[in-house]
Image (cartoon, rainbow over all chains, first blue to last red; front, side):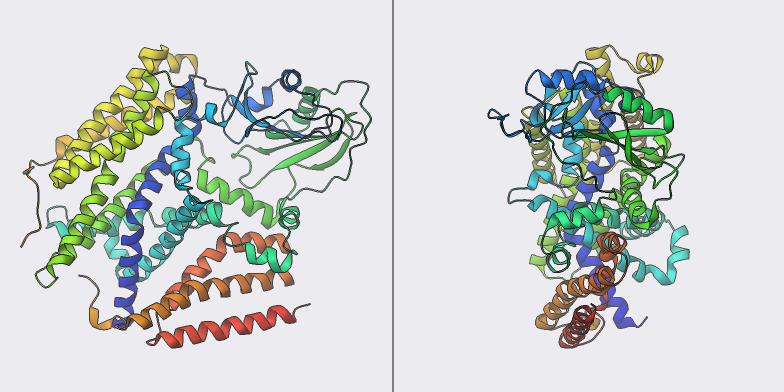
Length: 527
Length: 93
């Protein structure tokens, strides 16, 4: 590669990196926390569930409980277990019998979360949780001020991250093997930042590339990539694309307008399905035309990850139990359906149990480090006499703001867990939003006054470490499910969250002990 | 260590042209390329490929747009490629 091209690609890597860095840090940090989304919700609500919970639900009773509030006849009803929680996403359409008119249901009236042990319902806001918060902050749902603006920002950050990953590889290509082994912790700061950035960037490269691509796919794969396709190839009808991409045979049975004489048992259908495919983990049940002569039920799920990564299966029953369509658990999936499932699994990291999630988590935090070290290389490489004073001032403040915002996320996250536990807040945003965002703001302002990396780092580790220990402690005090009791009772979901915070605390104290003493007076630009 | 300025594009206009060619032109080429695939081969396979591999192609096209010295050349190449792909797209039954 010529000198010219090297410098050009190097510059595009620098500029794309510095623009997205702080946002990307937030995405990776909260995304790493969100690997434990469902466990965090089980922890927060003290509602751990067993493996394959959805397979064991009493759906007939769930329907009976729903029937108390509204007539279910002629509706399409969906139970979906996207998140591994006791509360199952439940939705229904208006009845196709026009004599059944719904009272005003409110915004979330026909979309709610049903606790499948107690059968009580929660709307989206009541169901809002810590896990949901970090999961959604991970793609900036909180920034959806104009339509889906937050998602678009997250998507563009992911896309420029992909750009930065590829240009990074191009720039480091020549020395890619030797750089992998180089780390000189005793050298000057610029060398340390560079070595850390390159070596850790290399270790995390496949992981980061995969996340950039799957992240783009999940958040803007539809909204950015498909509009022209829809417009010119599918007569501008989104239903046409969805039909092609549903990977299900269409069932053409219409609403008949005649009620069934006997009650249909959903539990029996689930039972029959599991008898046929014992390895199936059911995650969705869709009922069409409930209790009508035209009623049919689709039961869908996937085999466990130890059996197939790309697999999914479904079976469709008529009301009398006859099978009208199915895709077997053993049937090859083909490229398109397989890619659809694998892209998701790769991103969520749900294909290897907790061991894999731990590796994902560590790599996620390593990526945070790569991002921040990149920012510091950027600053230190521009902190020279030949750079004009106002530019240096701008660079200095930019990096101060980035560092303060990124590092304070750790104590703020731990604080949110403790506060939510201690205040018994099991749902809603009323407490969570102010606690998280105001404490974040307060810490950032404090660090901007001190303007000292050593002070920022030390305070964050100390505060974060102490608060991390308080997470399992607060859970023990409030629920009585101390780590060992949760372990004895087999509450894996709760245990995992407690262990995660204990390990985090230990790590931050270990780092604190290793840190060298430095001055904590505010730094200014060196002249 | 910052990139050596003497190798970078000096004119802001040419920079803007290159970024436009890479970002907008890259998007148009990606879309047309995959729309040709959707028309000519298996529909779901090409659509899902566009949704993830499309981003890789687009990012690479953004990088390639920086190679020519003149921004006009970048934009010209991307424009001609788009027109060529558009013609193919229209010609496919």
